[in-house]
Image 1 (cartoon, rainbow, N blue to C red):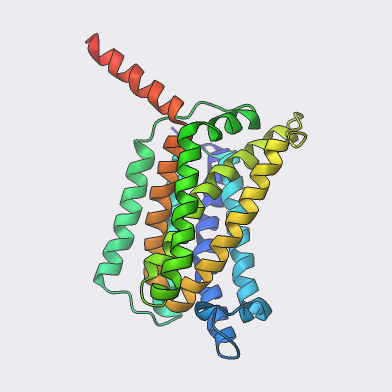
Image 2: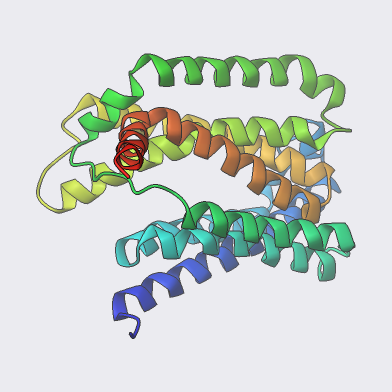
Length: 282
């Protein structure tokens, strides 16, 4: 059974996305180093990297990678596209080893392998989501008590990390910066999903941007992305890229899965109940 042309396009976009995103970590790191040599480092609260063309080249590579990843889902099913996101870890780790001279030891190699194996296992055993036909459906799920509580917990944890732990442990414990990025990232992904649905439906003829809910999701994406970019820069400027990349990927994936389970709990629970009902009749 041959692979379809759409799947080939989707997989090509997904692989390209991983290469761009993985390389963007290295380019941004070099830009941060160059900016830090002439001004206050990002890890110490400086923003001189905003004047560094190399850093902007890295940001451009990351944006191109994210666009390619978004487009890949339009051609190929998620079960084929998602596991390839783990390739960005391999790309950044290998490039960090050779370009930045950040030595990748045996435990680093093992960590990268485990990331890839874990990602593939999660995707292959993930339950299927029911299709969503309106941004209002996502808004309905997002305003349920469970997800509101999750969002409040995330915001409280981020605030505590920023106010209490960044000044004390930001320079010595990468988990502080990575934790902020991962927690905010879980909210980003849920909002991006809503914005993606809005764009898809709008292009198909059903305008979703006439609803205020769509613009709230756009605002959340913007704010969360700014937080992630800021603290990811601090992490890259302070710690080895070969370590940051896999740890960030794992934490980001864990919180994203948790947020997705809470947001779409009705779909997942109905699937589980259906499965258990079938087991009772065997």
